[in-house]
Image (cartoon, rainbow, N blue to C red; front, side):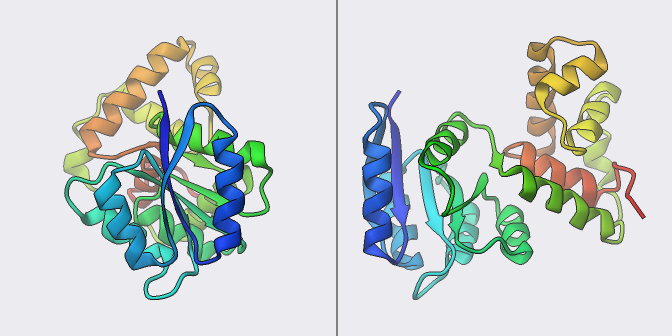
Length: 219
């Protein structure tokens, strides 16, 4: 399968560098570019790429708002990786709440960029470990909101258990070892709970778990 990518960054040299890295791979094709947020939305809706690499700071409309509008719009299945030079919490949390599937710093290694693209294109989500820890810590400090009881009750007891453990940062292999289940079974449980909750990936599942108080919060 060829992974079709759109590059959205206001710096032509950055887009050119990403293009060189990505198109050196046999399974990746850069199908479009955009230099501002408005253009990124138009190009993504027209070309329907598998992955959009979206810069945060762009003219006309920043990448976070473009991400938010693409997430709300009908018929867009492209998955978005937020790229930035700034490891700031407000960027991370706003991007995740808006439906981004990954968050990567621009100083990441070329192989990290390729890995992120492949992971997200395959339907999973990707965050740098430091970002994942900070997401968990941030939600640990926030007041518990009223539970979405109706959604939670759609889950079986096992699915709720998987969701709680997933929100602590466990990988599929760690979940399987902890619950004495096969990794295939874990993947099935995660797929089912995402579908029942109307969530796109495990990052949104982590957000849901913390917002609904399913995870014991640190004091």
